[in-house]
Amino acid sequence: MSKQPSNPAEPRNPATQVVTAGRRPEWTGGVVNPPVWRASTILYDTVAELRDRAGADTHHKLFYGRRGTPTQWSLADALTELEPGAEATFLYPSGVAALAAALLSVLSPGDELLLVDSAYDPTRSLATGLLARFGITTRFYDPLIGAGIAALIGPATRAIFLESPGSLSFEVQDVPAIVAAARARGCVTIMDNTWATPLLFPAIANGIDLSVLACTKYVVGHSDAMLGSVTAAPGRFAALRDTSFQLGQTVGADDAWLGSRGLRTMAVRLAQHGTSALRIARWLRAQPGVAQVLHPALPGSPGHEHFLRDFAGASGLFAFVLDGGDDAARAALIDTLQLFGIGYSWGGFESLALPIDPDRHRSIAKRGYAGPMVRLQIGLEAADDLIADLDRGLAAFRDVLSG
Ligand SMILES: Cc1ncc(COP(=O)(O)O)c(C=O)c1O
Image (tube, rainbow, N blue to C red):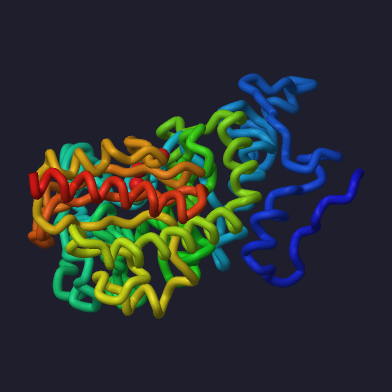
């Protein structure tokens, strides 16, 4: 069999791991990236073999298409390897599906969930919709609560959900303090780690029990597939796997392959997204018409001290607050942009601008921002070109204000 990078004897740099992880020779043959194994039916030689397989552990064994093929196993293994200390990873057809499975694998009727108020809106809807219907109550907490979370943990609290930085408002949470409080009271921690990925924040090594990625963003990286994952700390995978099997969760081989393909360049892409985004955030901060820039790496951004302590770097998504103006003035800014697309999602190679209003999606942590807000996904275009584009957009915004 042809030579492939071997499983590491000692931990490798994450930038090396994204290149080597999951490329087992028995799954790839001579092909560099694990090829697409599409399957529903798997054929057995005999009835005895079919029966044997049904009763056995099917992990990394062909059984039936829903349990995956080497294409899915390879990506799942690679994501596990990127989270030092993790047990295993399950893949999902979207980030939201991954979030749902993680929560359902832990919570039962009568349990309480502590949910960060800055969570992605569909996570909030899942909690107040499906979970509520099944008798699970949710209490929202301020993303900046830190060790104060201990006071919220009651006898029914089973899980604490974190997302850091928060969706739209970018507060960086004090993860170690929340993990310590959760462990002291026997609560499970689940974190949406999509913004940082394990390359910038290894969630499992930081004590999180279930680390969720919307792989649709930086893992896929090219805005052409939907994918999610949950990576589990030791002892947490069996419940996750069983729940996910019961829900019928599976990912098509083509999408898993797109995830594997994207993963190989994730470290260099993230570095470029991060460098350009920080440069543009600093530039924006100095522009007339901009009241505030919410970027975790900038001093004054909420939870900046936690970012400096815990993160290896920043990715390419942040927001800014306009200095007054209304929705029409903000629309003039965004509509003027030529390089920034207008659309949902992020993490692809292309830049995006989105009108946002975080306070509309908050129960307790409303911030009362000075004006309308815009979220930017900084892509891989030249930062100078993006700055020139934003300069034009801000001029259009100021024209509406003065006009
Ligand atoms: C922070 C965060 N988590 C999860 C998701 C959901 O991912 P998906 O769109 O793959 O369902 C998103 C999507 O925008 C997101 O921004």
